[in-house]
Length: 367
Image 1 (cartoon, rainbow, N blue to C red):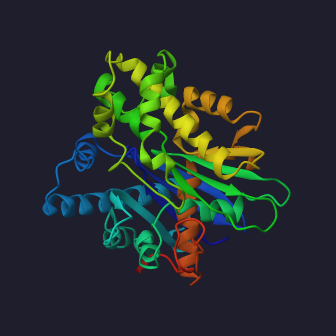
Image 2 (cartoon, one colour):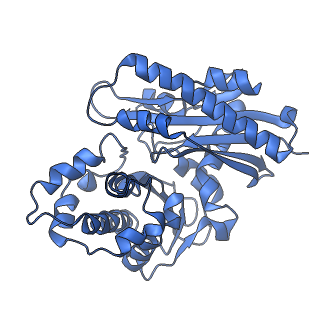
Image 3 (cartoon, rainbow, N blue to C red):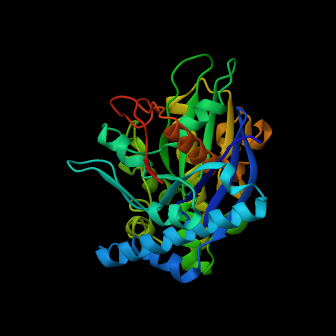
């Protein structure tokens, strides 16, 4: 039986811990998967960390413990449900839950919670975590990290393709044909703004299938205002998160729009913003691209996928499912692979992705 790794992540949407048991033979294969919901009260506390008020350090540390327990529970349920021998799992790769990402300035930092000591203790499995900070110590932005995995397993020797990860934040990985170096960067929001607007106006965690957005009309004046945000003009390497793109960001821009848009039209405009910024990034930085492979939760937002397909045409927009990886589990698989690299003492080259000065071994090992 081949040795396996577990990859785990809770993304910008903060709705669940996604855990996947991955076998590398040598390509990644999802043996089993599990999505552990984040309880509503815990999710509310995580979201409150981004409400513009600096959180108390006691709350951050308490959440670090609680998320560590939740990540460990997700791993244990995954193992039990899979029937896979625990002793045959070499390591867990846990990205954790990002609570603040600030890669620029004199003191760049990125904080993920979900204490890996607790995960290792409660699962009895070596845990690799804190992947971002070694890259930042080497001058990188610490994110995105998934493009290195995309490069390792989704590149084609004879096709200029791009991998598009539609999580809370969208990131794109240009994969030129041949041996040219891969790059990758965050293009801006994918689902995070739409999710936040849905919570405010529908009291729902997301706009299921993009149906609410599909019934609205795009406000061109609002879209133009949004597209003028400096982040979208900033060249790569670049990364962002919920601390930048949030309800405060929407509210600030809405103050300059008259007459005030209907909330459903705002949702339609946010959907179009995600599509426009993703497509714009590909047009600008990878015009040779002939195919896009999408993954992440955004592939289930039909309105977003339709708008992306229209803006990216005539390039076909597929999902990674056609290439052997379920779109839902690609990012978890990436952290299983990153844990494998760390356990084997292998460096990951993120120079063309995060802007780091040299390749490094990512993450800390908790036994």
